[in-house]
Length: 288
DNA sequence: CTTCTTGTTACTGA
DNA sequence: ATCAGTAACAAGAA
Image (cartoon, rainbow, N blue to C red; front, side, top):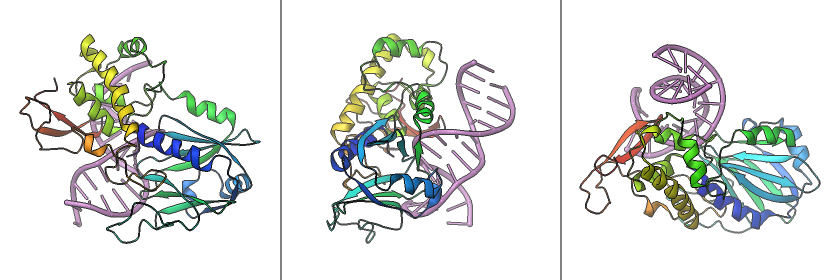
């Protein structure tokens, strides 16, 4: 599922690929994905030049030259943004399921065509993602609800320690709460807690100083490393080139139910439970 | 056929 | 106020 590292990978790629391009045509095949009226959405975008592609948590923001408005894109579970030069065969090669690598496919709901004939496809198998044009005031309101950017300088150990105080949630729910820290999802929450030897069910107010420090360090380390590997493809995720991420082989607990714990000298078997409403993987031996 | 999956929001009840 | 739990959204995998 797209979490911070996956969204960051796409944002960096798109910034390079579509910055400065002028939109020539916008096709909306599934209007419910767009949270504005289709006419307002299309009329605004056609003729616009892309100024900037950026991100806050898992939310993508696209700005345009000569406009105050921002296009927000949220992938939710299965959204994709895939860019193709005109006529180029999409990378990713040999789909086992036939021709899903050819775009547009049956999950392509919006198509942006630029003046140079290159195209950006919004695909979404489960149709939970959304696109929305917002004014600066609306944008401010949306961004107010986001917590720290975990890789930013202001997300410091000192500030993290402050956040942990007076909180009563279990630590998994804490990591998933976008209003506290923005961008961690189910996969990285499990990985961060495994790396920190802390049980996901453990209440945040029972953590000792060492555990708090370790969790803080691993949030930064694991998210950064996942970006370096261009994200995790568990099933649906693809980057802006349509390719899979490389972090899956570095996953230590997520998706490893009933397998042996990879920690040295640990004989545990990875268990799967439901915590904070999500499938949660952990080792009951080395995660205390 | 049923059950499970996931990000987010909305809602309920403690 | 705060938190835990669940439903809803959709469609595919097992």
